[in-house]
Image (cartoon, rainbow, N blue to C red):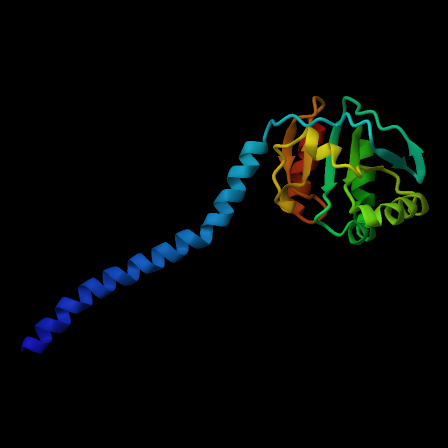
Length: 189
């Protein structure tokens, strides 16, 4: 009889302990998502400075001067921690999106911050590929210096700006259909 009482006494605390462990693991597993959500919320309405002087701006393979117009813009920022050359190979994914943006009087602006030893190759590829949207080569990190509140998280380096260059949407519409749908909705407004 003592053995049954002892077993019953252990079952309740073991059950409670198991529930606590499960809830803790669940809470910890959701922490990165909550942190990402907080960063996205913090970015909403954040002004972005696109006035950069020490950059090379290329459109259609031609060196030019980028002047931020009062249009909505999709900004794709590729920092020096990413493989810029790899990313350029994926820019074809933005062609249809660029056509859609242009038809709605919006712009696609790709800002590249390549590693110094890859800079010349990147510029040569941009001249050769003749992308029909703005590609800005920012070799000295001027964009991030002027916009220090942009998070380090690469998932947050693609965002849409309103006419006043304030962030209205965070996410890459070329990789996420929900973001693409939202982008089309906000550029219509």
